[in-house]
Each structure stands twice: as C-alpha cells, then as structure tokens.
Length: 298
Image (cartoon, rainbow, N blue to C red):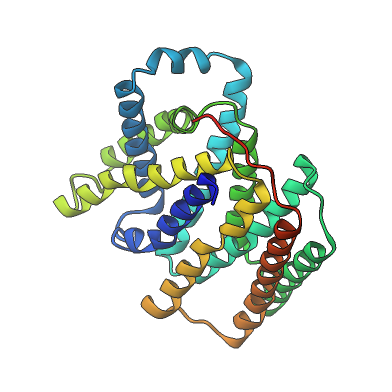
C-alpha cells in the first residue's frame, strides 16, 4: 500500500477520536479553545523547523507573494473548520459533525474532477446524486439547512484542494498557516484574559495541560494529512476520509448519547450508500486500471 494511504489513515483515526479530547475541555469557550490549538501548534511547529535546521530555508520560501496568498487561503479555511468543529462538538452536535465529514469525500471527488481532471464515472455520479438527495431530505426534515455539516465538509474539502496545489512541504506549509493565524489568536486570548474571561491559568492545571497538548493533538494529524495529500489522488483521500466520521458518529450516539432519530437515519443512509458505491466503484476501477507506482521525494 502507498505510504500516502497510511498517512491518511493515521490522520483520520486521530480525528475520529478528537471529540473525546474536546469534550474534556467543554468549560473552555470554543473561540478560546481554537485559539489555543493555533498557538500551541505554531510553537511546536517552529520548534520542529528550528531543530531540523530549516529556518533559513523556511524564511526564504515564505517571502514569495504567491506562497503567502496560497497559505493565507488555506489558513482561513482551516481556522473556520476548527472553530466550527470545536463549537459543534461541545454544543452536542457530534452526530451532525460526522455528517459533514461523510459528505466531505464526495466533495473531494467533485473537486478532483473539476480541478485535477479526475474523470467522473457513471457510478460516481450515482453516489454524488444519493448524497445530495440525503442532504436535501435532512434539510426538509429538520426544517433547516444542516449548516454545521455543510460548513465542515466544504471548508475541509477546499483545504484539501489547496494543499494539493501548495508548493511547500508538510511542516513548512502548516507552520506558515499557523503563523498567519497566530497573532489574531494571541490577541484574542490576551483580550479574554484582560476582561476576566480567560480560561488559561484560571481553570486548573489539568485544563492548562490539556490546552497545551492541543499543539501535538492538532499538528500530528494535519502533518499526516498534508503528506498524504501530496502523495495520493484527491479521490483516494476522499474515500479514506470516512474513517473519521464513522468513529465520530459512534462516539456521538453510543458514548455521548446524542439523539439519532429515524429521520436522521434515513438521510444518513443515503450518504452511507453513496460512500459504499463510491468505495466499491473505486476498488474495481483500480483493479481494472492499476496505477503505475510513483517515487515521491520526502
């Protein structure tokens, strides 16, 4: 199996367990928790760059305007995705977040078709149609658009698309993304502390250690994902991605007792069926048209 596949599997498994970590920090407001993830991730990444003696190379790379534009877009998408996810998990919407990441692979396939000329085959069209039908059904049944799911799906699919085109390696790219978000996050946390709303150093040592651990918990899967995005087709990333929402869904329903009605089951079944079709179709296509192995520089 391609090393990129293993990187993707590792990233999605960690993300699948992420709700457990976030629920331990329910007492921390979502924007503060997201800001801590940004800050500690940036500090960790800078340390990695310095220890690898790549700081001068990194500085030269980020001076190009095109690089800054690409990674500013990626950083904005990442920030929106993180904030939405953190808020949704701690507000009791783990099941709906899982729906977003079930939809994500289908959006990734569409982006692969449109931008990377990964041709859409007949059964892929069927899968996309079923997923759309499921979302429309849930919208009508809920009486509202499942905005959490759609926000998570669209921001992360677009983030994957940007990372596919991004020229920097995984560590340098993520370092730049968190650097772009670092000052706004730091300013917000400073303001929260000054106004008496800050959580860091005010909610106990365990809470502080959990906030700091947000650095490696956030950074490791993103580095794995970034490495995978550069090594395997976007459509394959889309197929492997349902590992995370499956784990999240099971956590939401069986561990955190979130409601899951027959109405939700019907909509989810449409999306799950779409993913099964997509996976089977992709398996047979790869079996009939095996890819030529590629050697990728690390």
